[in-house]
Image 1 (cartoon, helix red, strand yellow):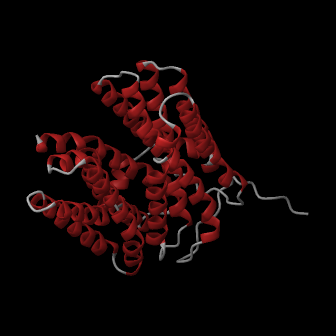
Image 2 (cartoon, one colour):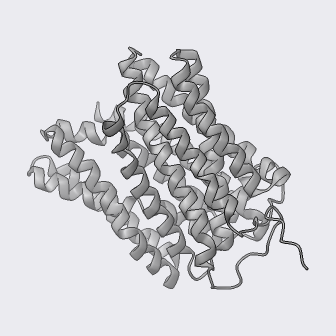
Image 3 (cartoon, helix red, strand yellow):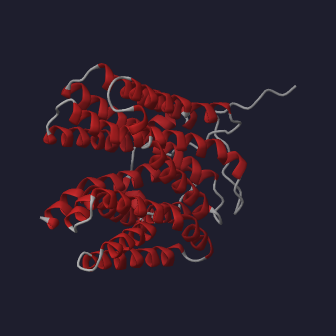
Length: 365
């Protein structure tokens, strides 16, 4: 009788244009659970910090700590995967995310919160590297755009859905942090119980940004730009909406429409990019986002309806740019490049997202 395969052992990549959709399902389900928990935690931290009397500058510093951990993970995760494999690293980082969420409730202290948020950023960026490199290793080259588009639809849907737990459970007390930890732990089940094997490990434990830039400069520039624009929009978009005389209900609708637009066009643009040169689809989406930005510039002087339509259009074209960029990068990557490429592109996005809100705030001022 043959023994079952070791799930941590690397398996060959998907052959040609075919994608094992059934095999990808546990990974996408695990990613959705993680994203729901992390999306809830991001909002919870800001709300709870305000309730605990943290100053606005301290809340901003706590947010910066998250991105510091995020960037550190991009540099370290390839080495961790080379040492232990995708599945074990996924399990370890999910556990670290659960622990860091619980620590927030156990110690309402600025220093503890700074350290905890840095750990959460480290855990989540590492988890994103594992998931995205795994998806790209298993996606067929002729279907990669659709695979990543579905992943992003799950991302947007779960992050949005997770927010509704906050008013239902409440931001006070321990329970809401326990729920976040439960999400991180539950994400282990689909991966741990599936028959999936790990993709090929990275070729090197170090992140060679220069080599990845040479491999796909379009993907690198795309992720930096997307981080700049989408990070700025999510941060100062509500401020723009308020300044154009939208009420609070309309501000929430403005941001929700942008996310809905992104979810709606993910799959059609991904499908189109699988049939055309992805660079043409990237250019099309970029032009659409730029046109929506110009519309929003003039929309403030027109009507609330024009602003809401502009927000929907901007999200519809801007949000899919990330999945299109990483799909293009992976078209040029080999099996041993997936982890390093994913970590580098996440790093590029994080750097852009760190600068974008600051720059947008200065421009608006």
